[in-house]
Amino acid sequence: MRVRIDLMWQRLSFRTQLFLPLGASFLAALILGGVLLQIFAAGQLADENEPARRSTRTIATALNNTLRASDDPGKTLDAFVQSLTTSSDIQFRSAEGPPAESPKDGRHNLQGVPQWFVNLLMVPDMDAATPVLIDGRRVGDIVFLPDLSADLFEKWIGFLALTGLVAMLTVLTGIIAYVFAGSALRPLQHLGEGLTRMRRGDYAKPIPVGGPPEIRQSCAEANALAATLVQLSQDNRDLMHRLVSLQDDERRDLARELHDELGPLLFSIRAGTIALVDASRQVGNLGKSAQDVLQSVEALQQTNRRILDRLRPLYIQELGLSTSVQTLLQNFRKQAPHIVLTDTIDPGLDGIAGPLAQTVYRVIQEALTNVLRHAKASNAHVQATVTGEALVVEISDDGGGFPEGNVFGRGLTGMHERVRALSGSLSLLRVDGRTHVRCRLPAKPAREAPVQPIG
Image (tube, rainbow, N blue to C red; front, side, top):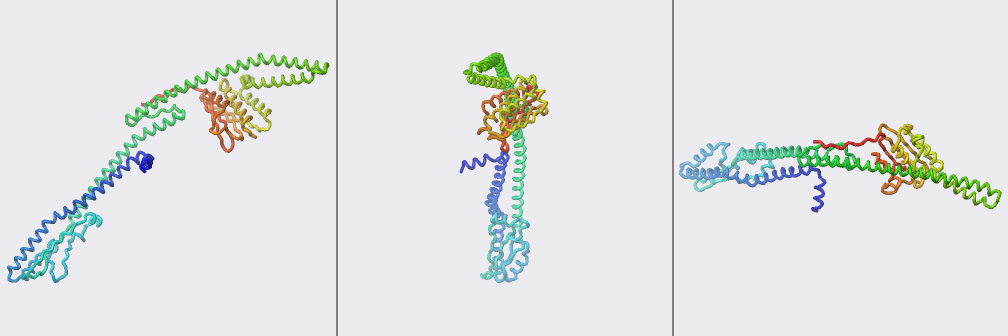
């Protein structure tokens, strides 16, 4: 049970956690005030009216003494009754007539005091009656009927004043707490948003430094961390760029070796095999074997050309990126006639050169290779456009999709490293039954400036 309460409390916002105790304190103050009022008000009312009760008894005693000494007690009693005014708390109640009622009875004349407040006070019964005797016979009572209207009204006004004071202090404390919470939460919110941007790899926008000293220090430290991460990220991209450049150099050297060394050898073998095929027609017993050798050599030459094409598309510089991509798409259509391939290639790609052009070509090449080998797709689409300062490449197909967990394969992992080296992004998406390989690259890569802390 306690764990559940703790969890519920932790889910509340900071302002709610701050104002709930204030509201509880206000209610507790009201309840405590009511209890204290109930304890002390009744006794205070009784003490305030005790002298009047004693005076009533004294008057009754004096009246009885006077009546005993009077020659005409009835006349003396009538004169005493006539001397009492209706506003007096002391009244004469005849034993033979109906009970006398005071128009100022506090139990009925509350002067705007709520009945629940009177019930809360539990006003004691302070009526007092002393018998009046003539010749030993009880003819009536001297009755004390106190008027508590003024006392109850005074208590009610005091209760309203106390409640208003507590409410005003609570509201004032709530306003101060609200302002304080806002001044503390706003920098914390900025800090949280900044850390979220840092987690996503966005270090350009610094975190505003403000709030109490502890929060200011945290914001400044977060900005310093962002500046460090910017430098590390740039160093990492530079390192990856150098690694990619080294890989390209190695691919170029290997492609040159295959082209300059293996190519002539294969051509020589093919020429010799053709000559052997021509000669075998006269001999008559070597034709089939020589023909098999010729087919193997031709297959080996095609394989060598494909390897050269994957190692380094030598014609990008001569033909331009747009034409090179179109040639790649034509080769794909020949290799996979069962897949309907459409394309949207921006002619502006011819203005792209160097590592950026090679990366675009490699991304399209690797994505189409995956479509051919793994997707089991019936149609695919290649789009490469230049929009502003961004170069967007997207290859989509209607195949079975990528592996669970959206994990890059070895080929796309290499492409991802290439794209990161150029400050770009590569992502896999599955939308409406189609798989999308989306690459976004800066058309003009620029070195990012470190984030400078504010404040």
